[in-house]
Amino acid sequence: MTERPVLMFDSGIGGLTVLREARVLMPDRRFVYVADDAAFPYGAWEEPALRKHVIELFARLLDRFDPLISVIACNTASTLAIDALREAFPGRLFVGTVPAIKPAAERTRSGLVSVLATPGTVKRQYTRDLIRQWASKCHVRLVGSERLAGLAETYLRHGFVDEEAVRAEIMPCFMERDDQRTDIIVLACTHYPFLANRMRKTAPWPVDWLDPAEAIARRALSLLPPTGEPAPSGPDPALFTSGKADHSVRRLMLGFGLQLI
Ligand code: DGL
Image (cartoon, rainbow, N blue to C red; front, side, top):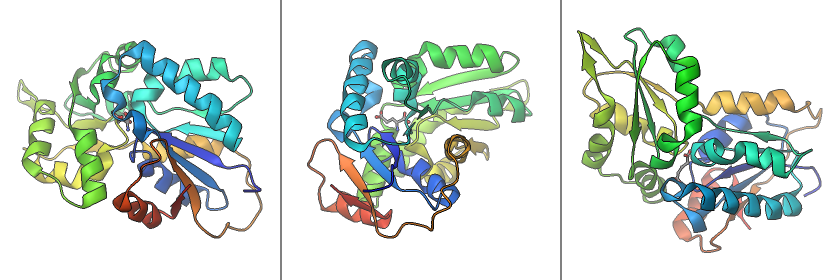
């Protein structure tokens, strides 16, 4: 690879929701997609161990790919380690993904907002600080899901999902209070937009599902100068840290214009 790439990082396939927006906004850029599938799901890790793991992994990734910028397309990793990454690798550019609590608070009419995320993101002080800072006038319910990221992985790899399981995971997001209902659900895990249609279908009433992918891609774009080069041809590389990506992953990667390395 001659041109320095944009590194797109997640614990699994969730970062593809951000990659697809980034490709639209930056068609002249090269990307490298990294899925830390060996450590999936991040949502279940203890904080100190995950922070250490992400820093150690990035030491190797930055060395190997020398990216122009790294997009941490994962709420669970960002809310825990974005500051630590910036501290550990000064001079490197990072864009993080944090729950879209501020836009949700600005948009809600009922004042009832839910944040759907991994158990890790729900526990983070970072997430609680965002609520205190931006949504103190709203009633925000944090809903940690053990299963949704895994369901999204299965759906993308094998094309099916248990709709009842999706419904059970999203139900706690729906609140009713004083004639008001939840009207916005923040998708605070990059895996979840892949299940948005199933969520809409199984939801008890219509809500806005906030997917921050475009905003993250825009932030990355704002930090990078235009290349002035024509669009690169050929697939971008994708690294799965387990080294054990199967046929379904290979096929999925091809569909996203990625080739496993
Ligand atoms: N895609 C990740 C996120 O945005 C989480 C999935 C996991 O638990 O590893 O939080």
